[in-house]
Length: 165
Image (cartoon, rainbow, N blue to C red; front, side, top):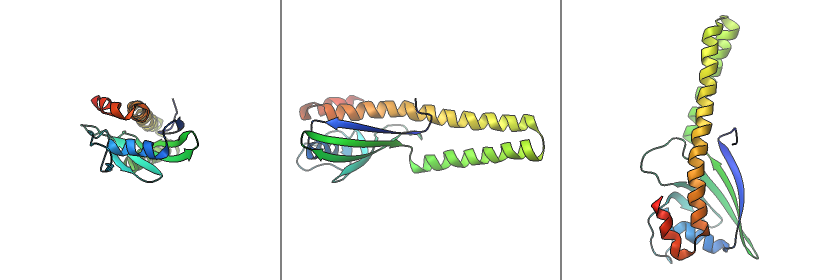
């Protein structure tokens, strides 16, 4: 497991760039292609000419849901997907905000007041907060990657069966 709440991946698909983006558009809320039958949305976001910015559709809010950023390039035998997985910007902001606040408390208690017990508690909370964010992000990332790969690897008639997730 990566110790940071983001990831990168490169995938090779036998589908052409247009087929891949059309398939993603068909299952992305707000980005339906006119040529494909409307399928239940599996992702929120947008699919553009050269890439996409999507996240999995969920019924209950989750701060650690990954944002999938993709760039698709055409090759003679299909396409290459350059994927980045990251936290949404507001979640990143609050993670770094509380990391900074707790780090300031750690430094204050250790260096200014020599209260090592309180500094140790803040240090523990700092580590716990960060580890919890990384674990929850990677748990959600696993679900999102699985669904994404099922959508891009299924034949067009079977994309609908992926909506059971």
